Image (cartoon, rainbow over all chains, first blue to last red):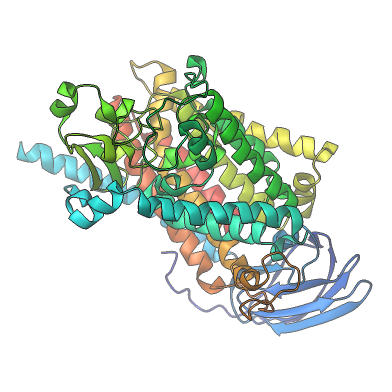
Length: 138
Length: 443
């Protein structure tokens, strides 16, 4: 269920620009959403030390010196939820400087929860069937 | 699935009986441990370029939680270097038992502390400071050092491995999750132990030391407190000790009724969820609170951390089991049914660690060449760029781990509920709710 392909949706693609401020050890905004197929421009502004932004899944990155703005542009052609993280060592909590980009609705989470429900129901039913079979035999 | 005795293979049996292979591993581990302390104290303060952070919190942690604990149970404890210096001092020997008696106090561990509450507290203390501990080399160095000296100090006062058994913050959760592992040390024939004179497995003999973990192997029914140190294999005069391969989670068929162990399950489950939110989530304010120890925000974070673990999760769990009928007292039901949280908790840690480790594993390659961050390039890999690994398979892998854990816990809940003749439904619902929360936090 979680891994099954979804039917394609038709959405008008837009060009969307986000200004993201980076500071030790957080992005602001730290979470944003775009539609699949949108052209996304991320303007990264660092407010203290050098920071970067690496986008999981897309494998693209940008770095910004303090006070400077650098832009990362890409087409959001992969659907799902993607973490972005600082790729320039910026201090102690650097490995945990993380944000989140959602492309389209977060189907993966919903489908995973659906998968979990099916799994639990499956276990309960199979154990009941086994017990029935066992008692039937006796 | 039947058990298979791996000590029936002569090569494995002789390798485990001999002290030399284990000593060789011990020496390498101890050297690595002391180097991690030194790196933490004198190396670069940049955590991602310091051996102490990279090798302890990324490499060792990955091996421990993804391989060692699920497949070998207390396998890590079998080679852990922390108790060694204290144990060597306590015994007055490195290998075989000496002729003369130990000159240290060798007191019995106090009876009221013969449980894992101190381990629970030790783990929580580290967990509350984890944002600093995981990222600051000198703090990691100090903590590793403190654990080594605590083990030495306790070895001089108390008998056997009191630190490992009652205080080690890592040993507590390894013991809990070792019940899942498909490996066990057990006796072959109970009658042999009953009639055995002197019980050398517990009391020691010329062939080896009495159980360092204060366990009588003849009474072993689960892995929790057996450190797989192999001493009983050496001391048993009747060749009655076996290492067996067995089905996963065999120990969980008989649920524990101890509250310290039940709360350990909640501590581990809750900590994995909190770490997933604090360290891997996008919320900067929470990260700031967790990192800035001593501030008002940190105290709020600490109170919330403890409230989730000791009030919210156990409260929800208790509310659920109160809805069912049973002749057993609530405390007994609570402890027995908390057994179901053991597989789920382990899989929460697997899912959390996958994200943390795959993202940061490339630091290991760079740190190999420059472990102190002093500009060395020993193997030509010091300039390896940071690159997350396998991020495209991370979400599916985490989903499989979490849903797999839920299935495993559902089955464990059914068995535990059947043992104490009550309904498993509230526990299954609880497991589903926390799994959904963990999916939301990680995906």
